[in-house]
Length: 163
Image (cartoon, rainbow, N blue to C red; front, side, top):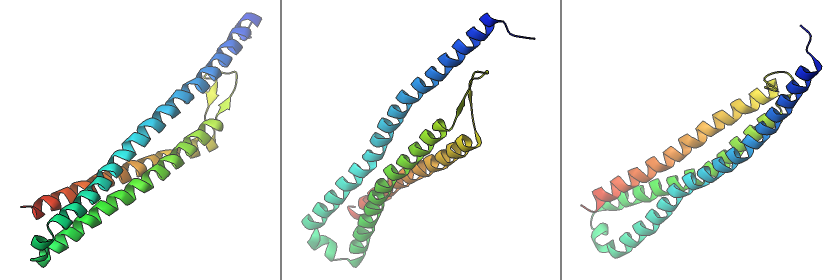
């Protein structure tokens, strides 16, 4: 069935509107993702840094008591190790998030726009970049969760130390 001139014009108008809408949808999503990612990754870092400062202050104030039992010093060293691991994960997470965002942007840049419904089509490259972005995103989530777990472990050890 041949399309009429009016149908063709309408299809092209819809295609252009869909292309513009797709580009417009991507902009705020990227900004939201970046804002949430930065905030979500800063929190464990601040907590770990504050934990290191608090642990060192605690150590200074309680050196005489801590040094009486070598196990206390081992626990204290473990606390610092867990806090530093948390800080390391917090430093790694933004880099991974950055790579995931680059992958998503590349994915979107390799989509094919045309005038046939649905007007925006995945390509092998866009699919590949999206998959890479998904893998790196979940790696970022795992690293941030690892950072939070390290803080939790350090807090647990600290509570066992101050009993």
